[in-house]
Image 1 (tube, helix red, strand yellow):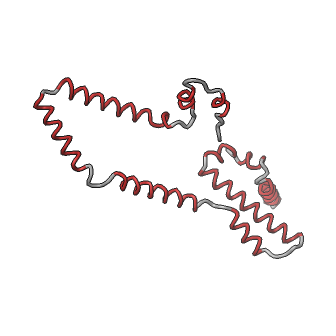
Image 2 (spheres, rainbow, N blue to C red):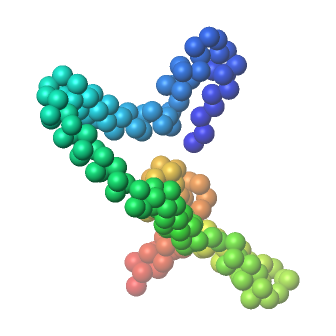
Image 3 (cartoon, rainbow, N blue to C red):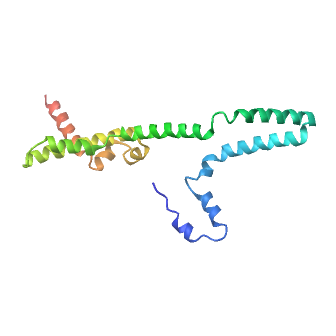
Length: 180
């Protein structure tokens, strides 16, 4: 769901941009404020200990430790590690995208495989694509929260017109079984 901020931007005054950033629903600040608070707290604690609690000899020892750690920080460049990480994340995302069940390809195959320009061929193609769309909705209901919110129950799928033909067929089969 997209959230529009254009009204807030148009009414912006002095100091309006920071307010807009804090108001932002998908704000980077809202995602990172806990980690940032922990980092600032630990940094302030270390800085306070270094400045006020350590003696001169302890300060020199602390500086030697930091220089030792800094020597080994350049062995593997951060840009290389970051590039490798981004590559892995992008590859994983692309694989998920490619594995989504797109009905377009199968619909094109159905259009090519089911011959006939008459009413029967058209009904067969339409029914097969309806089943394909229904299977896509049912699969995406189990994966996507957005689709699940749109179709929380099978009744919602039927109300949207996606499965009324299947429900009618199921009810017809159930009635014929009761007769036997």
